[in-house]
Image (cartoon, rainbow, N blue to C red; front, side, top):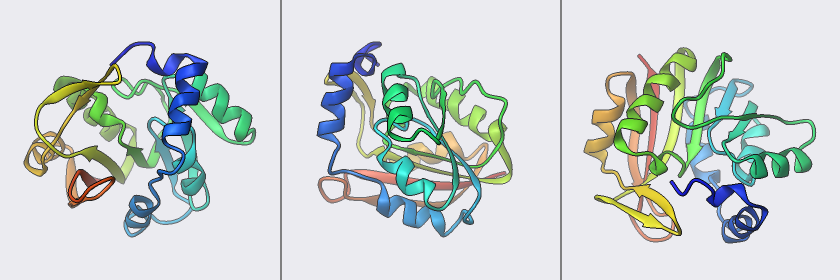
Length: 189
């Protein structure tokens, strides 16, 4: 990933404008089918906080990001919210959660980083914990706006998640065009 893309006020403001009309509301509806209200939930990569706000209506959400600029923004908009500076690979926290959520964050990880993240997620979850993640669907990798993007298939995601999670839902959906995205929901084994 471009080490400094989300580290400047300018790039954070640019991203907030780009993503202002996009949210994970439909993904969160699916998550609610598997994760009861009032559960503790870690959001990986809260960014501008759009999904954090939706999640916070039903869950005890801890937001996170590895960008201090996004964390400053999140804290200014949600002074009562809890936010951690976390890297999506190492997830260095001793807290435990009932669920972990990310919306188009883990596709910035290389395959070996994704494997490490999944193993760490399993360790952070309480028994029967639920994960809910979205990815761009496709093949290969690219650099988009200076950021690494790793595309995934249903089969490929099963290989990554099966060792630690029972896959409860794995389906394609449209973010911008039909079938361009994948949603995975799983339960800790």
